[in-house]
Amino acid sequence: MSGFSARTDFPRTWNRLAQSLAERKARGEPLADLTESNPTRVGLPQPDPSLLATPTAFTYAPEPLGLLSAREAVARHLASRGAAVSPEHLILSASTSEAYGWLFKLLCEPGDNVLVPAPSYPLFEYLTRLENVEVRPYRLPRAHGFGLDVEEVAAARDACSRAVLVVNPGNPTGHYLHEGELAALAKLCVDSGLALISDEVFSDFAWDTEPDRVARVAGRSLPMLTFSLSGLSKVAGLPGLKLGWTHVNGPSVARDEALARLEWVADTFLSVGTPVQQALPALLAHAPRFQAALLERVRDNRRRLVAARPSGATWDVVPAHGGWSAVLRIPREPGEEATCLALLDAGVAVQPGYFYDFAGGAFLVLSLLPPADVFEAALGPLVRELAR
Ligand SMILES: Cc1ncc(COP(=O)(O)O)c(C=O)c1O
Image (cartoon, rainbow, N blue to C red; front, top):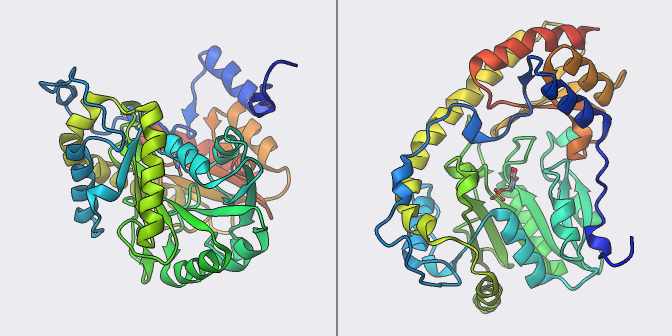
């Protein structure tokens, strides 16, 4: 249709799966929903809402980078995770999604591209498109446990590439970056003039330890510009409060220039509300309680899933070290969509791998967040359907 920008010309037709899920929900039929990824809907601990009623909640003190007291709270939170950062190198936004938009404005001319992992979180396609930026996927090879292979990143890059995105740990693959991979990536970034955008929203959610794991890039001095993203959505399970942060680092001249420009972008929007910034120290103090409960939930559900797999089954639970999801490798026939539809008929909702751009096989993605009874209820039909 004329009169509208091409970048907002999104496909709005529902696929068969979304349609069937909506129909089932509308009919009020029972559903074990293993697509639920909203941490506020699964019975996990929440902070006291009165925390948001700070005495000066209605005072407007516009600070483009975010209130210093809030940035200091983020710095303390990161320090408690072993990452030493200066509050001066932090910038607050309403979410990490918004921060991505700001970074694409900062780094890219229209038509430039950023290198994004595949499989991964599906929002990148839209976040880039809205900024007139292209995505060039680089594969996370299955043979490498869906970990980063710098050769794949190098092969995806071209003269218009401006940044590499890493999601650490991966969503939905739950694979962490390792020291050797980061060192190789840093070299590629320096050689090719690329910035590194490191999405660390799940970095606190590891359930085991591995040697050489890079828990986060925040707080590390690398030879290229780095932007480390996280926020309340995952760290404290509070996506509705709309607060994310970006730690900017790298060579000091480039870092300071990036911060000065980002401050200008942020000043144009001033999008983070005052009450949430003022309450941030208390909200982050709640994070460990939320994280402990969530980790117990995902660990238990993962254990249930692994235990439910009959020996000799034609499907596997893909190994992972953290995150909120489990990935199943299933037989190529009848494939992802047909399996998801059959599961829906049996009262279980899961996501197909194509939603996350998996390749080289058929995959399902299950949220590990649902309460034990919901997860247990899904396992019987899941095992039966996958045995057909
Ligand atoms: C890897 C990853 N990054 C970013 C986000 C978005 O988080 P926010 O609510 O801060 O925009 C999500 C949300 O699911 C995510 O999975």
